[in-house]
Image (cartoon, rainbow, N blue to C red; front, side):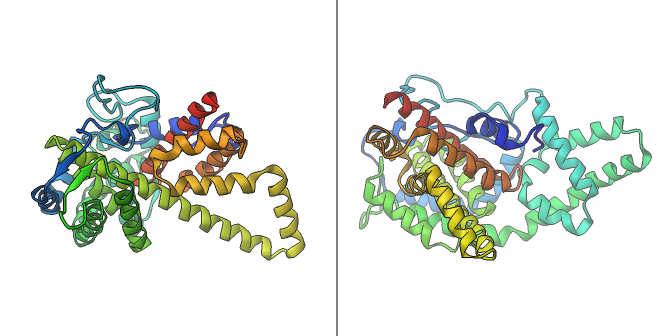
Length: 381
């Protein structure tokens, strides 16, 4: 994404996230699991669990269908936590579908096309695998053809033509070589999902109890961090779409929770890695410099904001309203301080992820919802 001005000059993190989400082919919408339309104690019998396990078998078929006709998946339920959306139809993605691409859509595609056309052949597989859903879409190839038609430079025209051919071969190779990895990721998703089932009976009780939500997070934290990649997220997305097609709203809500917990864990780990990197750099300049930096952070209230941000990343997203409102009313932290911490996280973590990747879209949506909750609870306080 190319910005006209440094990101630090943006007024609010909402502006950054709105631009980021509008520039991707994300089908994620802001939905809240707490407002899932499932009955208060909907039960999914073990047979339903087996159905979800069978989704592993149908995953590759679902994935290929998604590339042509992506279905909306959901991370949260509403843009306004106070708004009762039970009687309103679900939102639909305006990024995918039959509409004409916006200037921002075209801009992001052009940026990717230019980078890919200048990349070495051996660099294509890695680049394609990180943004497979964007580069494998028909619209992406149409845009390459449009660029070829208007390009005046013969050399550039040749590079674009070659790119289209190379992409087809690369996409086929990437899909073929990642099948084993997808099976492994499906097993990881299954482990987290089964932690949501009631012990002994294997039933899913929707909404999930606090114990089941905690069990899911423990199961995810036990996974190798390297498994929480694009394959993991694509598997969750495919299962979620299949459940939505089958009318299993409760299962959709459970998988929303998987995405939320993934985002919280991934962002928290990335922040810790960033702090360690900064700490190492400061340490190289001597203890005096480190003490000065720490004093500046404490004076600015950043340490408190960082600690509160970590707290929010570790709790269930359904608890955000209570955490935020309580902290604001007790003057534990100022809304401006936590908003600034979210802004720094967007700049340092989310914008550093591969553009167009599912990891970027899920984490961006997660933080966008947090920004909304901060604004809502600031008004209440």
